Amino acid sequence: MIKVENLVKTYSGYTALQGISFEVKKGEIVGFLGPNGAGKTTTMRILSCYLPPTSGKVEVAGFDVLQKPLEVKKRVGYMPENVPLYTDLRVNEYLRYRAKLKGIRGSMLNERVQSVLKLCHIEDVASSMIGNLSKGYRQRVGLADALVHDPELLILDEPTIGLDPNQIRSVRELIRSLGQHHTIILSSHILSEVEAVCSRVLIINKGKIEAADTPENLSKLVRGGSIGAIRLEILCKPSVGKEAFERLEEVEEVEIVEEYPGGWVILQIWPKPGNDIRDGVYNVIQKNGWKIREMSRIRATLEDIFVELTQD
Ligand SMILES: Nc1ncnc2c1ncn2[C@@H]1O[C@H](COP(=O)(O)OP(=O)(O)OP(=O)(O)O)[C@@H](O)[C@H]1O
Image (cartoon, rainbow, N blue to C red; front, side, top):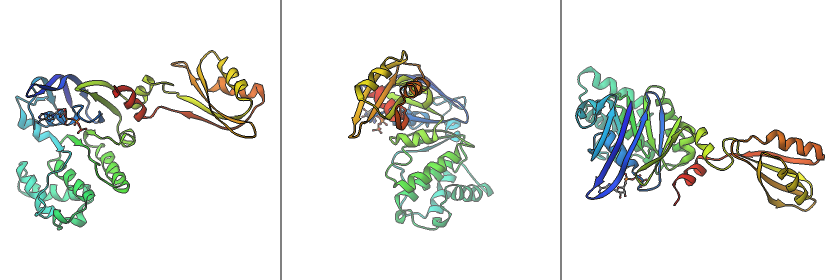
């Protein structure tokens, strides 16, 4: 659905994208992550033909963005970061207007507007002035606008920015359901949200792609790998526990996190890369007959991966 090869974008001498390459397959929901100024919006604007690339090749649904921009625009629904809406139009008037601009005519016009009103759960505000809507409803109107010509690809720049937790949850559910029929690329700084909806993640930093993979595979890049560390609360002398676990061949490090009165201690045990230490840890506890109050896995979150890959 998207093929980007060696894409460069410069703004009057400043290089915002330094030759990035990536692909997005039909049906994927891809999270596009990166610190402020990394180049996400620039990339999304190029994909939706709002900006021309300086060099490189960008194809959407097999059409080149420079040679066939109209074909690309037919197939792309773009929701920019700050959705520009006409506040003195009613929701249904605005969507009809946008649909007409996108070339929808005749009986299809009503059909498409009714369909996106329903899909985005804004039927109840169809006759309201956009200026009177809450931020969450405006976001949904922006999404309905992006969807009104039934595009194959949805490009969403920070779709949940400024929303409260309930609204975030409902927009997230909406995106997830849209993923059944559309390919989606979305940027967000809410990493738990990306983890919840995206099958794959692209991480961009200073105009370069740092990683492109599933969250599961990316977690192998950080300490503890995909298995993660083991956190234990056991009844034993801290130094004795630490040494016992350190003797396991697959263990890299044991930290004493906290000691409590009564002899309880919290230990965090880090495996050497690629090792699963769960059985080994259990065997040590059993052999020593230690009482145990908690055993859990500390797995790398997308936030840990993001920080690891993008911090200076
Ligand atoms: N029209 C422009 N003229 C000059 N520089 C620009 C222009 N648009 C973006 N830039 C610069 O290009 C770089 C990438 O910006 P971009 O908006 O793509 O980043 P972003 O990853 O979307 O950031 P954010 O998370 O803050 O939205 C930034 O340094 C920005 O200042």
